Image (cartoon, rainbow, N blue to C red; front, top):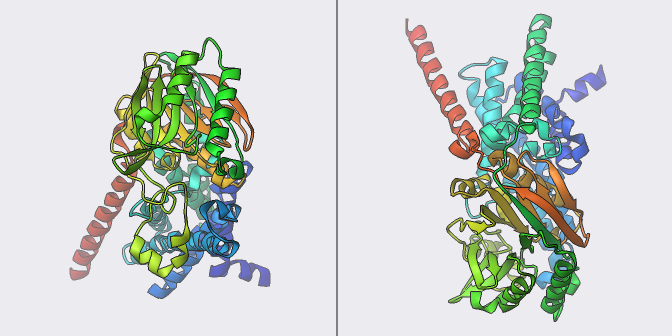
Length: 518
């Protein structure tokens, strides 16, 4: 009896649910855990009243902080930050600040579902209504992380499902929001199977099973129904030059030699395009005309090259993916969403005054990058390619916009070498899988040290190079002109649900007031 009472304590339910929900994002083999890991959280929501606002905030923060801290522990792999000019002590301070600071900032947002549930009890205390409110609150907490200069929408509930492609095809309808909501809904329904009386338990179980298997059936059908519109033979090169060697004196020449040699050794007569990752050569080029070595290589191999390069134009620094052939730069895509603290300093004066150690950070350039403002679609072999660079893959809207502008395939050049062999490597790859499913497009991922991959229109990883593996991917990519509902409508599910919840609450309160007055 004591054990039973202990596991029903609010703080235990919250801690265990947060920790279990974080596990699938690090260990993808535990993907099924996501479909039940939120049960303790919903059990708490259904059975425990939060009488005080302070209690809502405290318990919401407790869940959010533990959940994110269990995911973001990969920040430990950044230590030491000697490549950024920091001492061991400074490195430890920055890593701790990143790990616990971001976990705290994102964690406080999880007060939203708890606060909404407290308000919802004033409208309707039925478990299904509370479950709906809680789900809306959780999605809101996730989406807010994409706002402001601190934008970092990294942790999505369904990311751990990326290898179970049959379960995530719903992303083609409502994006990753829809898959997140589906996972949470199953958790809520299974929780109702625990708290409801026997007859209602059966109903809840039948509904939960029906929804889960209907989603699975849709996924299986969609995976086996594909269409193509031309093909492209790609050669994606992963040099895996170590950080110490890359950023050492003469590292740019070393990297250029490594990537050039790998390309020349593995190119075939069928290769339509060569792809090098983000900042494959660690050098800032003054302008497009400075890319003579890329032009020379493309001309020598008679094959166009897409490469990630850093450019300086009129004093402005941009992170770019350029398409180069024997004539020079044909298309130049400038990164639209920059990495906070890596490519620009958000709220510089405020944060520098609070955390002086941040001023010591020194990457390849010592000023903020300037973001691009268009999709710059590339045309190769009769097809159109949309580009995203590294961090941009975690923002669904950027890939969607490229597809709306005509992209029939996507290319992501990225530099994940900062992440070493941490769990963040597969988490970042998982975002790319969702971008493919959402828009029905092949995605070629070219990384400096992994994980490079070719992902098909249904999210299947058809070829890959593991972390720190030096080599190439020779693969055929198929263009697609499929138009998914998500591509047409974007993240429409959340606003529809939120507005519906608001209208229902207002109508319910008006009716109750009229009943009371009568």
